[in-house]
Length: 326
Ligand code: DGY
Image (tube, rainbow, N blue to C red; front, side, top):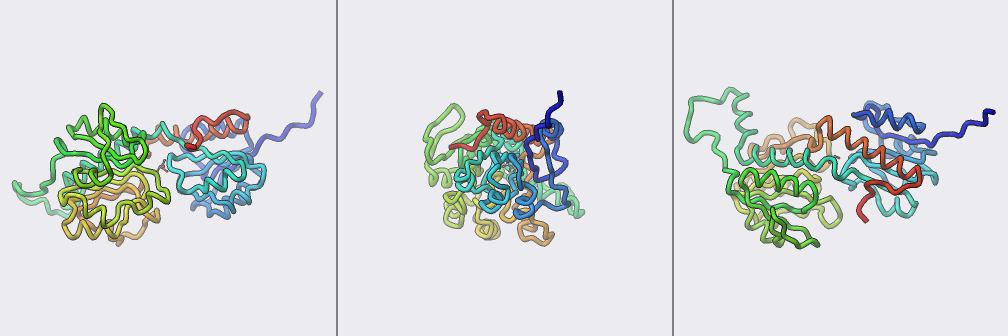
């Protein structure tokens, strides 16, 4: 006897063609609709896509606010980010609507720490600037004083935040012979790799300061002109977290004035930055990357898979594997 087929739960996805096999798996279980536009959806477009859905899978760059949640409707049960950062989500609005929000810790720490280490090496050893000179035909005869950078071995790395990515960077930095210290506002503990210090001591004493804290109302602009002024003029600032944590204008001023040796940024405010004349791109002591911290095939596939598993768990009435920290 064949009954009326039970409609499958609906899931909206903010991009088509996400890496890995998880989207096929999701589509085998749910009625999946993906955004097919050639540019990312606006929040209103995402709301329209999510209307009537129980699950929504988004990227870290998507904005999920109260209007979007209302547009999706009262049936929405889970917003699964395929990203570790969740600064684009209004978590209070989600909680007020009983919508579970999940993210993807655990699967991207090593990959992102690789890029942080690469930025440290590129900035301190002036590798970006020397590659630029090579490309402009400015190599010239071998000179003992050309393309000189600063050593990484023996230098002190100061980690702002001490979560999974910072710890993965600490392990790498130890292998490069760096001394490590960290600042976390609440967890004031040392471990075998790193010593806890105050924020001010970290800024004053580190040769490399690397940012690994989420973007929140407390951390927005936490590295501005006063903090840069505390850093050594021989120091390097690296940011693989979120652009809004560092005041870009203050950073440019410090670099141009010789108050800071160098910087490496994988993240900027107002991404994407597409103007080739962007002052950040022209600064010779600054290495900039287009937010590629987690950009390997395996890691991006793992992020999408974890987001899909989070959707499944919530829609099956189970505890999500990786909800946002409470
Ligand atoms: C993250 O996971 O937060 C990365 O920045 C990509 O969004």
